[in-house]
Length: 472
Ligand code: ADP
Ligand code: ASP
Ligand code: MG
Image 1 (tube, rainbow, N blue to C red):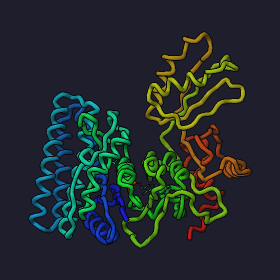
Image 2: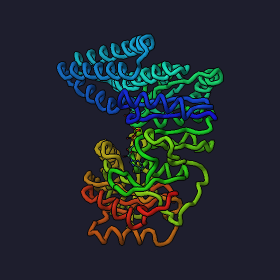
Image 3: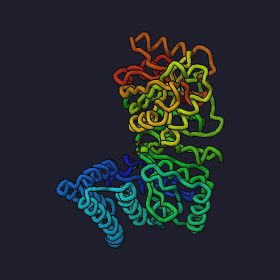
Image 4: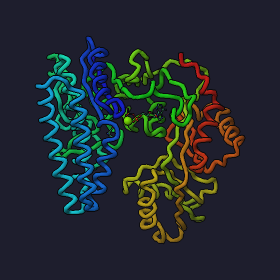
């Protein structure tokens, strides 16, 4: 089999864990052609983001402290993860190249007190460019034949939306295949940095937070992998975030559509666009626990087995959202009002998660990421208010809300699900702020006040008996 194995930040967080990754690749990869994709160690990306903030404010001392801490932690990890002296020397040389680039970039922007999106991505890329060489060394000293490369070197070409770049899929697939196929057929194991791509000009880009998952599936689609394995610190995709709902259960089989909804709403477990590259070809994606390799985990595939009568499979929550409401009585009966609103949002590059329109048509509410609320509201004010005589009267924003989704194939068309959901929520005295339509028949979504989010997820999880889901 051809398998892409992606290891997340938690799986490479310490030297011990990096050694465990090397053992996993060697043992679970036996008899297979394997491509390894790794994230940055632990919360390195968060540290790099903090470094960017300090640098752009010109704060010299904190910048130097952060640089020293990143250097120290990676060199310590290298020393503990790689024992063979010759291999360690090679990795050290690789790390020194990245560390000195990082130092130059950070010091340069500290002097200027400014950081462009392009330089910020160059800084953020260093997390993956420091962890993957250590993994490379750990594989080499175990007798494997690994080849280290960045996402850009592997052929992942993206647009230039720094910070949230999208792969140009056709050229990427071609380039990645050209690069990796000969390596795999000669028994080598490519080790590719997750999260990174490069523009046509060769500038480094990042694919958005959690983007290493996407790197895994881009490569899977390009090489026509038999499976993509996403190794993490949980037993698989679960009926809810286990940190919110302690009795959440592992799902065995899930469709691409269901997992896609969970990704959009569940945020952390899966980068929202992860499944796009593989769904079309039907390449299965398996979620496995690095610390429990004998578990089967969750497989995302076409036509998953129905192992339960329960159509609801999961309850997910996105905390950091906001609602923008465009109001104005005279929108009633004016065709094209909604189109104008979404056109403005689209032009401003803002993703609308859900929409809701009142029956009288006098209000249209949109749920967006909280970070884009202000930009969206400003763009709407500029474009709409006062320009079309009286059509749009006011734009209101609310930022203390969370979006909750009940996910499962067919949830919207099956009678009784919405009623059961609202009864369960009402029984806990929680007020539903808004009911919204997601983009598919795979979820029923609603907005509650942020302070009620956790309780709502728990109420729904137990109302749909997900804690008793037979996942065997
Ligand atoms: P990695 O570092 O491996 O990329 P992440 O932290 O990005 O891991 O994602 C894994 C985490 O996602 C889990 O530890 C879990 O707390 C969280 N999570 C949220 N929702 C779910 C879910 N439905 N199923 C599994 N994990 C979830
Ligand atoms: N290191 C990146 C992040 O923390 C990418 C990833 O982990 O998938 O977002
Ligand atoms: Mg992740």
